[in-house]
Each structure stands twice: as C-alpha cells, then as structure tokens.
Length: 80
Image (cartoon, rainbow, N blue to C red):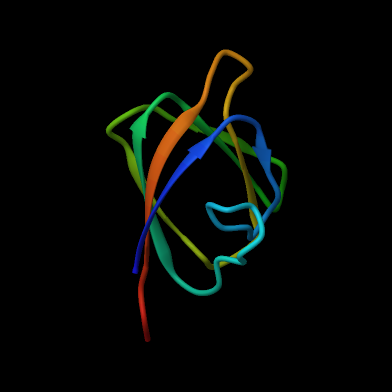
C-alpha cells in the first residue's frame, strides 16, 4: 500500500497521511521534499531530509514538519 502525504504541521503518533488513519504495523517512510522531524517514544528527535527514508512501526512516534513549510512523504505499509 502506498500513500503520499503533504504535512504542514504536527501529526500525532500512529496517524496516517490523512491525519486520521492509524499506521499499524511495519512501514517505511520516504521523505520526498522538505525536512521531517520524527520524535520517538522516548522523546528523542531525528530529522530526515528530502531523499532520506526510515522504517517504523515497532513503537509509537510523532512526525512533524518544521514551521517553514510542508513536507511530502511516501509511506509504504508492509503486509505480514
């Protein structure tokens, strides 16, 4: 399953691109444009610039775009 999202602010942990669909299970995120800040369950921030990708789904996290502009991402949810 592929989903593209443009984020203009904070997205609560576990929410999908439409800010309402939970992302459940293992998924990968590719940052297409902008910088995406991800804060893990321990409160540690990590910034992913355009072109970077990461795997997630083991624990809750929050993803947010900086105040300077939106972030585009492509999320791939991996079926078991």
